[in-house]
Length: 251
Image 1 (cartoon, rainbow, N blue to C red):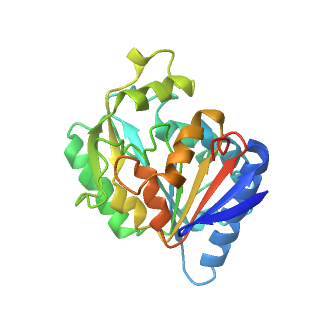
Image 2: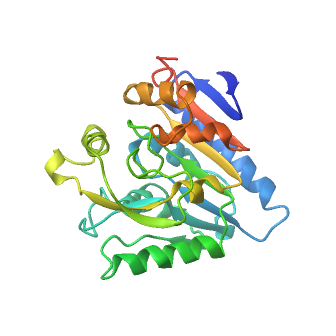
Image 3: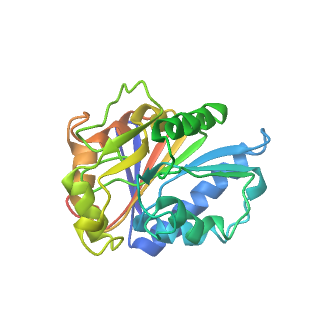
């Protein structure tokens, strides 16, 4: 493993995905245990994507006091069948939440009768439980959650909102194997906004794989702007980027 810093962002580069997953899980576990020394519970937002697979597999084996964790996820498709394995709540349930018992597991409902009411409900929960740790992925278009470049707003007044997904984002869902073709990918989603993600006390971005090489190059070397939303991580007071040799290949 090699590491360096870009502005405020800590960057760790690992040989491969398994090594990255182990280290990220160990880092997360240590931080949670440290926080639980001085508080009753810890509030965590989790990312849902195949990039998280190794991390989540390791995390499911950890000895964290899960009964003291309030869990959230950061985005969800609008209008996708509630039982679809491509749903982000279902993804996390399958890989983590069915194996551990959190104090609260809070799911977004992309099929709510009133989608704005659902945004408000989830925003209220995030206000009630301010985020201690956010686990992030970075999209091929550098989005964080579903804040694609055309809807990302570093000064967004909202906490949760409905967005339309850009073409690159929808293609990524096919590349990730979540959908057979782009026609199956929903066009809209709920997402936690950029400022709400950024307010987390600690942030860990887990971004392996060759398809993420361009995004990592932009994250670390492009100007900080909504054109490349993930660049904002370089301003976070306590953020770490976990990448592997594949995703770091263009640095």
